[in-house]
Image 1: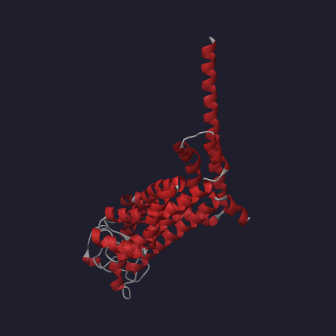
Image 2: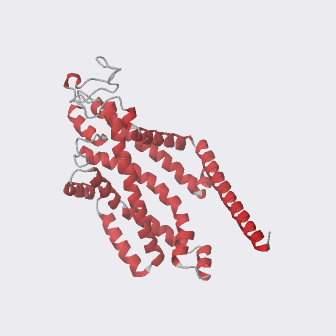
Image 3: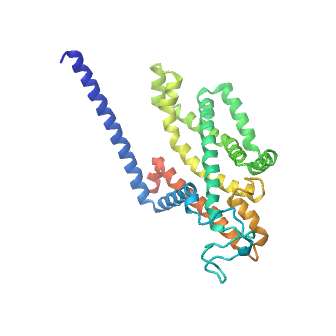
Length: 314
C-alpha cells in the first residue's frame, strides 16, 4: 500500500469517526429531551394527546365504524349509548340526519390537523425567510418589511380572516391558504427580533471578521439558533389555527358541508343544543382537548428549548 492509499484510508476513517460522533450527539440530545419530557408530566400528557389526534386523523378510514356522510333518518337524533334509548351501534349518538357522530368526529380530526399543520408550515417557512432578510439586512429593507408586517398585525385578526374567507368561498385549500398567509407576520416579527439579538453575538462577529459570506452566516450560524423559538411558536399557532378553523366552520365559512369538520358539526348542532346537546357537546370537547394538549406540549417545548426557563423552574 503506497502513501496515497494510506492517506485516503485515514481520511475515510476520520470521516466515519466524525459521522459516528454526530450520531452519538444526536442520540444523546434526543435522550436528554426524552428525560425532560418524562419528568414534566403535563408535557407528556400534551404530546400523548397530540399523537392520538394525529393517529386518529391518519387512520380515520380504519378507525371509523360508519361512513361519516351516510344518512339514516330512522336513527336520527339517537342519544349516546349510556343514555336511555341509546344504541351501542352509535357510541356518541347520531345527528339530525342520522349520521354517526363518533365517525364524523374522527374524520373531522383530519381537517383540523391538515389546516393546522399545513397552515403553520407555510407561515413558518415564509415568515422565517422574510424575517431573516429583514433582521440581517436592516436599513430600508427592514423598514419596508416591518411597516407592511405592522400594518397587517394592526388589523383585527379574526375579522380579517372572516372577510377573506367570505370572499374566497368554502374550500379546504382556501382555509389553509388564508391561515398560512395571515399568520406569516407573526413569524416575521419573532424571527426578526431573534436575528437582531443573534447578530450581536460574538461568534457572528467572528464569522464576519474572517470573511464568511452572508448566506453561510445565515444558514450555518443564525438559522440553527432560530429553530427552537420558532418551533415553540409553531405549536401554539397550530393550536390557535384549529380553534380559528372551528370558528370559521361555525360561521359557515370553512370547508363545505360535505366534508366532516368539528366547526361544521357545532354549527349544525347549535339549533338542537337544548334538546339534543350531544350533537354539539362532543365536537366541542374534541376541539378543547386537542387545543389543551397542544398547549401543554408547547409549554413544555418552550421550557425544554430555553435553558434559562429551565433554570428558573429549578
